[in-house]
Amino acid sequence: MASTDEQSTHGELATIGLTGLAVMGQNLARNIARNGYPIVVHNRTKATTDAFLEGLEGDDPLSSADSLEDLVARLEKPRKIILMVKAGDPVDAVLDDLLPLLDRGDIVIDGGNSFFGHTERRQAKCSEQGINFLGVGISGGEEGALNGPSIMPGGDRDAYAQVEEILTTISAHVDGEPCCRYIGAGGAGHYVKMVHNGIEYADIQLIVESYDLMRHVLGRSASELAEVFSTWNEGDLESFLIEITSIVLAKQDPTTGSALVDVILDQAEQKGTGRWTAQDALELGVPSPSMTSAVYARSLSALKEKRERAAGELSGPDPTAAADESGESDRLVDDIRQALYASKVVAYAEGFDQLATASRTNDWNLDLGGLATIWRGGCIIRARFLNRIRDSYEGDSDGNSVDVDSLLTLPYFRDEIASAQDAWRRAVTAGIQAGVPLPAFSSALAYYDGYRQARGPANLIQGLRDYFGAHTYHRTDREGAFHINWSQGGDEVEPGKKLKEAAGH
Ligand code: 6PG
Image (cartoon, rainbow, N blue to C red):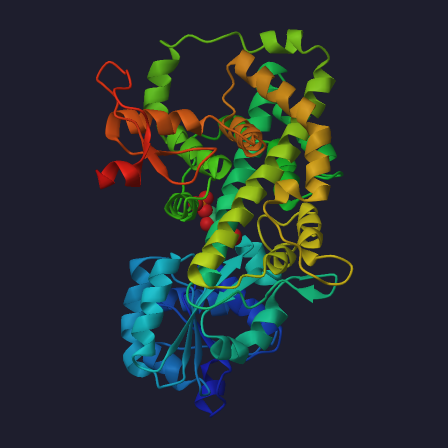
């Protein structure tokens, strides 16, 4: 049994406190205590705290507090308090209650999925009182929180240094390296966690498109597909999400005896991190079509009633026709595997491009190879693949960092996509022919094809903008902004002039 309140009342102060005992908070507290750090926990509803303590075994140094005042009184100074409450207003509410109780130098650690802009607002508010506020992304779900999550801490570096030992100790470890590293100032930690989730959305969408294609075009059952994903998990696609896809597909529904996925409603919820990633990509001007298409796909999934009505009215091809044309079904399965891999590379390329751009914009100096390193274990997107990204950012043999335009142009990924692209195109074609929607696969392919075009079609966009709005255009052969005085009919009434010269008249 864990030590009880008496221990603290006898004068022993805990190293760290935690408020918010939903499952993530409970498991994080157990992880901290199991690693030998005395922790005092609190929850707004005392019954939850009591039930949590009741269920504990062993003699890990975990005690409870009845109120925030009590929690604060039981901590050594400077106090370190983890908030594990729902992102949004609840974080502000707890902070409002907590701040009057704290002293200068105390550290508040928000371990939820908070929006990074809110984290920066809270940091400013706390700093007025000399309190440090760290925005710490924690990934890995319930199991990760208990046995070792991936941790992305952001905020004041000196404040982080005071909790570094605890956070690195409780994090997952891969090849002896902790999956926790200081990310950067301000909201950098929560930003990186947000993009992690955006990539998670894309990863999941690519998996469900693979599933959709195989079940509709090839008529494979859930249990057959469980086998396919299990096999894929032995190769380059090896990852937590592919592994659990196989487990979920194999699961029988205890009530009906059919495959569980076949009785789960096809409407996916979302809490916001994917949408924020897409919104911020738009703000930064970073193309992020695969990731964003995954957010749209969830929104479309939510339109269940409209989709059901439309299904009876909108025509489409016979989904099995593509199978006949693409020949051997095993070949299509392997094409889909390669399409999944290539699209995944694109989704990560988008995500890392967004991280690099946000890093420059916010002066975060993000270590992108370091992010790949801490995502190798503990988090939802953990994958063998991340070793390759980490290696790609590691630099040359002399330790010089490589100048990375995009993951797509790094030799390893460039060659992988080159060998996968024929299969990728066949898989996307099969989906289009069969009328199976592949928003992430096809967006990723379009991104790839767009990225490798030295001269795309935006010249025509510029021409049109100059016609209807005198927005000017730039030329391939001369510097400067140009404009043509288009007539209504589209005839040029005066030769195109460099705008400055034209304006000078
Ligand atoms: C993690 C997860 C976790 C959560 C997602 C789910 O890294 O542990 O990302 O944070 O499962 O936020 O997000 P949605 O509800 O939006 O799918």
